[in-house]
Length: 251
Figure 1: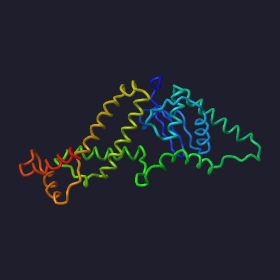
Figure 2: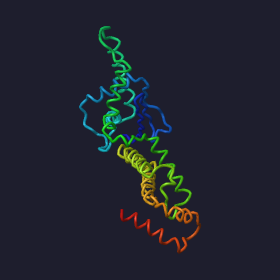
Figure 3: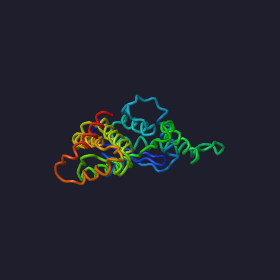
Figure 4: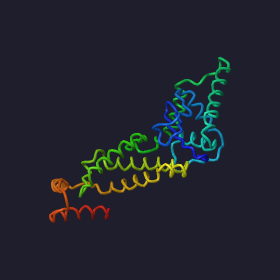
């Protein structure tokens, strides 16, 4: 944010949490909603205002984009509770003072509004590519890092990874996207907290994913034997190593 404050936003179809934090693990809660009617009213109202879009160009989640844009226009964490709280007060005022004959927003109506916004982009993606949450992505990336911490194999056998290589790649992309969003919100704070180094490390680990291959069935026994060895690879292993290194750069 312009003030250098760090803001973490977590939004789902059932609630909203905004924290004075970097990655949401800890930090003071600035604003929180767990009422689906209130959340639907807030998101719908904010989306109808004609604001300049200050969010990163690669931020695609429609609800997160609306909330983030409003926060960026406010510019300070201290304004969030007052402004968002005012919208919620307006919601209750309108509902409580409306004639009984006026239809009210039901839970089903609210869920329908949020579902439309949450899934407007996802529903246009291939059915074979389910969305990853931030928590899913982080868990998958950490699982791959744990594998690499045990030592890089001479020839990585993708079938031995904790998740498919494709899924790990998607998780890295989402994890990196999350870091880059934080960086765009406050570059100074991002660097001061050392997250630039974390981002470089994550990118470096993502590149190491290319060291893992779909091993041909006839090579699996030899690759497993090779990866079990310690020290420099023996001469008999040079051909198998060269085969998959060449395949990596030719693909």
